[in-house]
Length: 412
Image 1 (cartoon, helix red, strand yellow):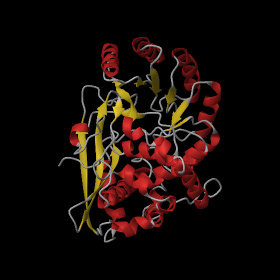
Image 2 (tube, rainbow, N blue to C red; image 1 turned 90 degrees about the vertical axis):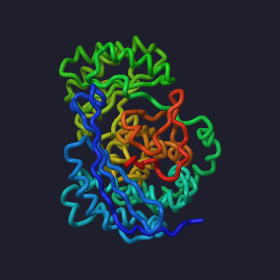
Image 3 (tube, rainbow, N blue to C red; image 1 turned 90 degrees about the horizontal axis):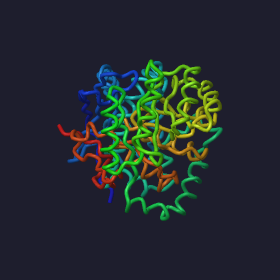
Image 4 (cartoon, rainbow, N blue to C red; image 1 turned 180 degrees about the vertical axis):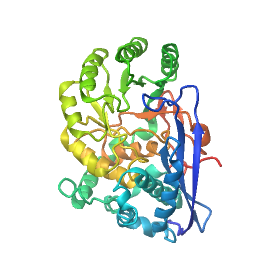
């Protein structure tokens, strides 16, 4: 039975966590401070909705200020009535005339939107005493699509088509529910942070494999290309030919560098090369994908909205879609992008800036409800201890979250 829950007021907090010892470092973010702009929806009951946007510290306060403004759109609303037609409220927030000039649909205001939207989905799931993945699976195709804003996508994804896709996929849902018995595969990003020494990388690989991970990622993008090449081969030699190894450039190559390095790194057989150049440069990615084939590109960590995702998805250069529910406008836009990606047969492998807390729910729904392949989900452990219900990994596999909500509650 649905609980009647009214959003009474909004609390916003700026939570920052220093990592140290090289953890979290990449080619551009050498000393990162992981941070959340937290939207907390206080209610007339004993539950509250928690939404997160992820940043790297400085500027997190700007996102918090934007949350305070956007959250006015949901204050005073009953959560089930709000979510019954949430697509309209989402559009009103994304198109708010006082904030739209600052985007549109990108930057600080869109990160703030993600936090508010995610808090709404979290509260909705808690109001029904369900983990988010299970709530989404219990909704009808029409109810899911009612939470989305499909504007500007009309030429590739109309409302009726989205409903038809979900209706057709629901017919075979039971075949994919086995994932709930075995868990969702993970991959380890923390073996190869940029500032780690070669010896630490080797030790981390061995530890990760002992923990059951057979897929892992190395940070590259050094000013010295030989360092990247050497370290990539070091990972391959240490992990072995059977391991799945991804390389993450964090946007540090120009196109000529990306073509050269992509062809050099072919020799160690990477599963993908991630964010090789500027994330807005569609034509560079199209050319690069052709020049370094069959090496595949993973893109989307810094793609901010459904429109730019539409362009990348249509272009053919994106082999893996790394949409992040705390970068785009929250769960609503994530689901929209996931449906587009499914139509074009591009796997969704989210970027996990939120430490997997939210995305463990999203990949379960993607697989069972939308029909995406259960490939694997990035795992980064550094903030686990700050969550009330942290992700649980056993033998390299995400265990199924069972607590109500989207697992975003932070320890006060």
